[in-house]
Length: 328
Image (cartoon, rainbow, N blue to C red; front, top):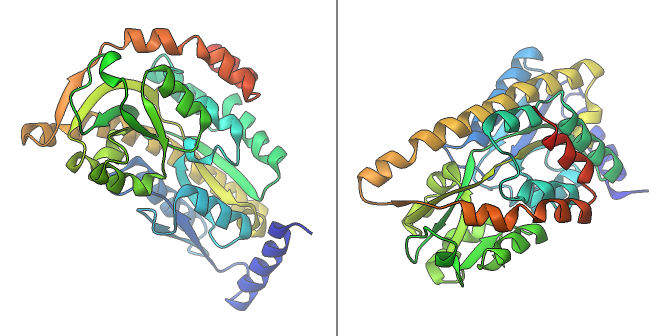
């Protein structure tokens, strides 16, 4: 018997002991600290579910990685001890290698294409729901969402060109494709959990990283990396994932409620990412805490674009890459 099957039985017994399967409180993990699109999406998910179930199902949100980094939380979800997670696809690649496609820089040509690709009813989302089903590892994809555009930050100097990046120790998540992308750009990739990044920048283990503006501000990374470069290399794709035991314990009606709530949360995550990108840096720049540098993106694009087909083929995601290219 698989470990998650045994955990599902334990979860069902726990539900009975705590008042029955119809009275549930689910734990949601996210690494985001306010202000962050993941937290906003979580609040919408919580509100929609609790209203539609008339309080039979409640969601407790645990921000700031207090339940562990995403890899730890996903593993806990497979055992049934955490129920929901909203996080970046980059840190989920050990569980779903096809998510590495979203680590490709300059994958989406514009925001309209990005929004269409993440439609909860669209072919890209359904492709990844099937990836989850094929993996058969105790997780269920509710929806994909956004998180803002990712830029480069560091604590050494302003970075405006490809040459400026050469030799920098740049933090990447666990994805091998992330490392390959930045090696191609001349950086020295260092794999670290996001929850360890602040200390790594303080101690010199890393001196550069890429992130959304929300994460840069919410985690106060500007305190240890005041140089922010507008590489705008990635529309961040995030996922709203549920433990399969938690999902399977729900009635068919409640499962539909969660899918509809996740669809609304998906739009919120994308919208808030756009809003925060436009507003969060201004007060930090005005106070002199952050220096923002415009970047000549053309050389970055020229060295990355040829890798798209190669990367997609290596991870078995050529089909979904073509889906994105076919969006009009």
